[in-house]
Amino acid sequence: MTDRPRLYLSPPHIGDHELALVKEAFATNWIAPIGPHLEAFEAEVSSLVGIRHTLALVSGTAALHLALQLSGVRPGDEVWCSTLTFAGSANPIAYLGATPVFIDCEEHSWNCDPGLLAQALDDAARHSRLPKAVVVVDLYGQCADYEPIVAACSRHGVALIEDAAEALGARYRGKSAGSFGRAAIFSFNGNKIITCSGGGMLVSDDVELIRHARHLSTQARDPAPWYQHSEIGYNYRLSNVLAGIARGQLRVLEDRVLARRRINRMYQDQLGALPGITFMPMTDSSDGTTRSSRWLTVIQVDPALSPVTAEELRLVLTEDNVEARPVWKPMHLQPVFAGTRVIGGSVSERLFANGLCLPSGSAMSNADIERVVGLIQRKMGY
Image (cartoon, rainbow, N blue to C red):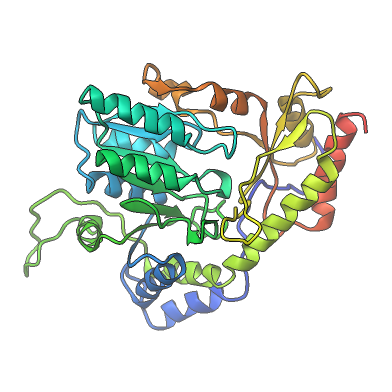
């Protein structure tokens, strides 16, 4: 193992605004969970995304849990979910005692296959087995193809929840990620495009959904002078201090998106001609109305064309203290979800087998990129 500095996959990138806002929270003694930074952060995300109602929470997983519960998901219901994703997209289904059914992705975007989803919903309707909700993930900073997805879910009256945890700053046909479906969620985990060390957000145009979620997120305390509770609640609210960090990060979101897109272009320019190397396909439009944030740069290594495998590249990067990770292992292959039903599956399985996520942090220097590129080129004999 080298003694060279560690190059992380997607580390936090803190700027000049965050500390000042945190100091303001301390100076005004707004250390308790609720405070002016929290309210301002919610308003700023609402304006950015174009959604009327927002609720800042401790994680994207907490946001998805509330979104599903308030969409009527109960024990024994089915909830369909993108299979090529992180476990946080699927675990809340299990929290509620529901049964996950996983949906394969499409080649065009690596996101939920709209045709496969529509056909499966039509088939389920004929057998009176429609799911209670569908969770569609915006993978690696790219929105799914929502026009046919929204149409299919609407046709059958199935709640659509957008998991935009990885996609803040992305756009689809002129609308921001997070503005599709009955509700959507974001994550501000430490590896996301902006972070407040943790954190998430639930967004919706449904005022009653957010009102009820706000009540549940603060232990569902009734409006009484004593502590009274008529339903089970959760300790899910984001703190005012962390919201100050998030507000500082939000001010530079566009800069962070542009930096990640620049890094992606540099990788493609220097690695795109190597045999067997392809990049995650992007659905960007020429007018910018559809745009990926390029949260992570992800490659596929075709073992029939490349002299090395994705795993061999990962290992050579690891030896040089460079963090790289396989593509998400599909949920239907996870031991915890063994035996669950999957609709399709072959595309996500191949992407997992041959995929590799490269360091993509927005603070990466040209020298950092050259370090990664050089390791890959040398391993491939170039």
